[in-house]
Amino acid sequence: MQMQAVYYEQFGGDNVIKTGQLDIPEVKEGEVLVKIKAASINPVDAAVREGHLKVFLPYLFPIIPGWDLSGVIEERGFSARRFNVGEEVYSYARRPIVHFGTFAEYIVLPESYLALRPKNLSFEEASGIPLVGLTAYQCLYITGNLQKGQTMLILGASGGVGSIGIQLAKAKGAYVIGVASENNQAYMKMLGADETIDYQGVNIGKAVKKIVPNGVDILFDCASGETLHQSLSALKPSGKLVSILNRGEGLDKNINFQYVFVEPNATQLAHLCELAEEGKLQIHVSEQYSLENAVEAFKQIATHHTTGKIVIVP
Image (cartoon, rainbow, N blue to C red; front, side):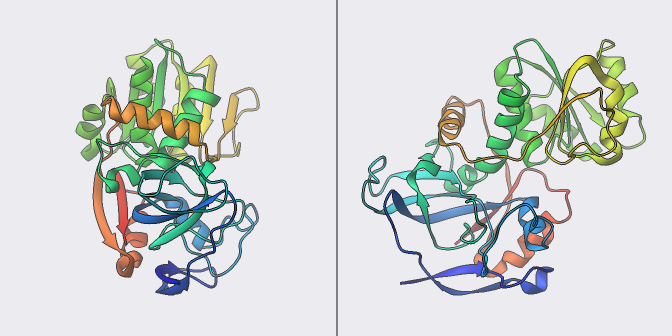
């Protein structure tokens, strides 16, 4: 059997992206076949395609990009009985080897990667949660050990990870300051940010200190660069810096710092599903593209100025 898929056979720019027929992988022990209803695109998908992560992530061509999905269980392999055929699921589908991704009609995954999707969200909205949701969850709840009453500063707070970060921090009972461009101030407020800062034309650290003179407990970096370095002065001496971009470059060795690269975790996905169904987590889908128009989705995500999520629908 074959399926329609987006793929590339070498690393490079948008010109290496193809759309065509590829074989559907065989369903093996402990695995399920999922019919993909929607898949969201993330900046990391472009970074992988350009070859920036080939030193860190083993790969096998042809590569089908995409790590996020929502869909329906269509077939179960031997011993794969956590889900019934027809159940609606979602997943962060990054495997140890970059090969079969989610920009396709079907994917085969170990059932341990899957959780039931939030029923109050559309397939498109649900597909926007896994990567960014687990990233924010692991950064805030696990690495940052965020507690009720703490103060958090989020850089790049209107993007995919940052916008989930605002909501998870508020669900925990934290005080949240979001940093993004001027046209995203209302969006951050709508998500629950207590205070917002436009990073253009101000020193972020000084602006934060005007709001919380003692500084913040956790600095969550989803932007890096000059935005991060300006913000370091707002971190309490006892505070923690968690970044999804900076691996420690140019940072004072005395800062309590950790870089996080998200891992699949179905238990945490199930908790995110609960939060969504309780109304504590919403996803803004800004654009939708077909498999045939995946190049346009890549061009949009490469701008790094996306509000919410971009989704590809097979």
